[in-house]
Length: 306
Image (cartoon, rainbow, N blue to C red; front, top):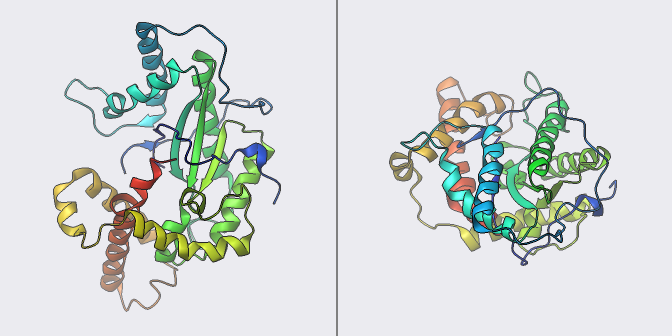
């Protein structure tokens, strides 16, 4: 899973709070098997606290402390020449802005898209399982650790990005909705008030409600993919040329290529492959399509607006 990205939250989009939900490669985050005990939901995690303004020096010290916590929750493949986490210099100014305003630190995480469609030797079904529950618990632990040193705390905004890729991997829009709906119920049942969810169609302004029926969701999936590309796509983008020039994206592509060789073993998108050679070629084509869509083409550009 990708590590949380700290971003500015703008008023252009309303975050979907768990309180409103009814029962209806890069850095990787590792998940622990024993989550901290989670308290009952708080009234809100992003309240402004009536405390004195923090001086610039104390602001930076507090931001450093928060970034140390975030860094501990990741497995970082690359550092600066001084051995510093690469994300620190990028995230520090944003964290300091929120500290100066005495508000919760928002972290956006594109994650929890759907389950693998390899139901033979990878997952048991299409709904969230214990792995997903531990993933959510790990994110709650992160927020709690930040709150322990910074009372306004932090909130993780999970952008469920399944519809960006599911048509490439042979998973239906209906399954993506069922997975996301159940994931939200789990977070609500466990009282994870510091976790919020956001859908692609909400980001695009195609749907404004906190809840969406399966039928409405399915109707908007194709429209959402088309609209994402229209707004943020790169016509004529040469993915092969780009991968040769960018080490980070090449690493992401290699990760896609590796895990999808297992994920798509029983997928309808590979069932017509005549043999291993054709299967590997098909996987590489799909991996490049995912790069164009999710990393380079449009999703990465749009996620920063949340």
